[in-house]
Amino acid sequence: MTATHPGTSRALSGAVLSRRWRLAQKLGEGGMGEVYAAEPTGGGPRVAVKVLRTEFLLEPEVLQRFLEEGRTCVRLVHPNIVRVLESAQAEDGSPYIVMELLEGVPLAAYTANGGRVPVAQAVPIMQGILAGLAAAHASGIVHRDLKPENVFLTRDAEGTFVAKLLDFGVAKVMDAAGGMGNRTRTGALLGTPAYMSPEQVRNAKDVDPRADLWSAGVLFYEMLTGRTAFDAPTEFARLAAVLTVEPEPAEVVDPRLAPLAPFLARSLKKNRDERFATALDMARALAAVAPGGKPRASVPSPPAERGSTTLAPRSRGTLASPAAARVVDPLPQVVVVGPRGSSGEPFDRAAQRRGVAPAAVVALVVGALVVGFLLGWSLARMG
Image (tube, rainbow, N blue to C red; front, top):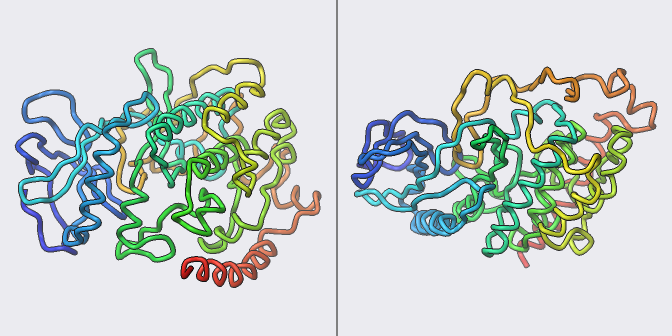
């Protein structure tokens, strides 16, 4: 494999890495790398290979961090974490990571545009997320960029959906490439504002496993309510909202979620000392309040999967997701939240009945907080 000059595009399909992996079609790309399907030259199942983008090949710190994080993830062997098989360099020094090739859909395929996942399916997905986080945290690894695109739903041998976490370590590579608060040349931002914990917003280096538990709580809130916990018109406004705004209580969005409301409220405490201490504690608390006892561990198939689409992880945790943003499932227990709430009336009208300010007013209020947030954040960074 021969790398081109940084900043130029590469057509790597057909290239062979280390005489072991023959790259096939490109599956996707993101801020840090490109992902290709690949076949072992010696035979065997197909894999996914992530290759660092050309513009980072002359940056030793980014290159080294990419390799180190890949090697760290090789140690993470767990049913709820995507399997990283190898982290190495091609003949010309270009780094790459070999992963299992997944078939299924990202969680984002369900939650996009207000899609709701019924409790009976959301709970086992959440338990799978927490199981994967517990394994990673036990190895001293914090994800730092958990979001719907980084949770992949794939079926096991019995046809049951299993949640798998993607892209551990990418946040650290992005940090080396530019860091929080500064966009890299490819537009990457360390973390995703809507899912970042308050402590990560204040200081990207002040992160421990409880930051991942916050993100998991945001994911669960979004699955159950069909709403983003911290919605705002811009990324910086979302960061301010994470610091200053409380999500609408789940039981207000849907009274049927009342049994899970205390769990969600604790998951989203802005003071991390008031949240669950570990992923295992959080999983046990969820099991104790899950309605109807042990939920079934399967979820209905979204339209994208019914078309036998094969998806694989791609850089920055995004996936070759279905083109349709809104997932509509035929099963009656699935609640699809579109322009109307559970009562059947438009969301805006329902919000006004509860005395909630319209979105435009909220945006103005949040915007006014941004200036103070940016000043405090800048001083924290300088310190």
